[in-house]
Length: 622
Image (cartoon, rainbow, N blue to C red; front, side):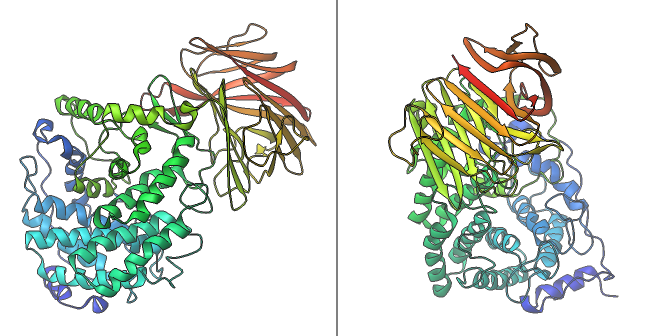
């Protein structure tokens, strides 16, 4: 029986297309264990490298979970945690970085066992590549966009490290060939797995372009370089919605747009300086500026998450210390100053890092699945966070802080994104076709002093602003086409231009019609359903809020209160928001499990009022 070492050495000498699959039953010697980390001195890390600390604590457990074929078993990254999933192997970059970078705090630099584990992991990774250059994720025979796109980036960054460290020369040869084949597949404009109109998953296509940009710096190829240059305007044309977001599964997704797509664009821009990327970043920042709701107390931003199609990013803290998935977005702030509003100020980050260095708490391994190697790769480009002054100037330029009177309506592919600013309020809506996990209808209500009062969630029928029918079936879990009016719904239609003094909205489906009238300080919402239903409003409450029903009953923060009343007041600081529905009805305010921001103080509470099919609500902000 050949040893694992002999097989790996033989494999490393073969061309990529001939690399044998590591099939079940193949006998190997065990991948050697890494010794556990004995101590970790926080103060020994430079501020910009603190992000590596939890990964250092995770390295030995992750390597020691590898199976003998080089597969990262143990479920540390991506699912399914199956040996055919190439995305699981992306931590080859992590192993390579810790092997090649000597630091006072890195006991694994130059470690022979770590190099052997890296060699095995690369062998398994490359064995998964199809002859056409693509990689699988969800099944062995899949020719996947995401595993190939992200894989090009991780493999290129790993190759750069191996060359600089002058190790694993046979693997270097394999990686060079594998990257060439992968880029040939990825950059082909006729490859509909990568290129659609519009793109299905823009972040995944962008990841491959970022990776290819680095790979072509390492190994220039005129034909592939031409394909990459042509790909960037194609990305702008097919990946950017006319609304300003990046296409994700039929619509917008805040997490993938802000935390994945934009950083991947930044990675690509670091390599190419392609201006298409700057223009895309500028367009998205404009969209972002309507959808991140700044809390006046400085907690950070609430997210207008109801329109998100894939994930549920609900807030962004004011200060986001390492690890921060959005960190590389600083790349664009010189050309797009408004983006500074949504990044951590460099002085605040310095304070957070100083506090981290001085803490006596142990640094523990990362939770399984929460080990994204992108956090580390995006630390390769240095930092350029905005100053507090730059950030404050950008915040002041947010549209809903700069102006107290506008109606912004953006449309794309049957979806309407509506933003209404009046002196006392800022109201959001998402109408028309519903994309995937999104929820339609009114989505948020914000006040310039009180902050966010209402914020609907996606992928949750119990936490959207909706008319709910029996069986917990909200109208917002489906298409809700809307028409807009000068004044009360039913009058003269408004299709754009100067904001009307009062904006009317009529939306609905076969079961319910909802009329909304927005004036300077009031919102009137009139519901007419064809059956008994429940008015459901997703409130965002703070522990210091005082919620008092018109009958004198006070709702308990974090609990559940049911009473018969015709309205209630929320008192927040100097501001009172009044909810009135005219006739006493049984109403319940009940806390849910969702909390907001790192401190968890803000909490979701659902207001639910059963009615017989008609309901007339007025919200007055003062």
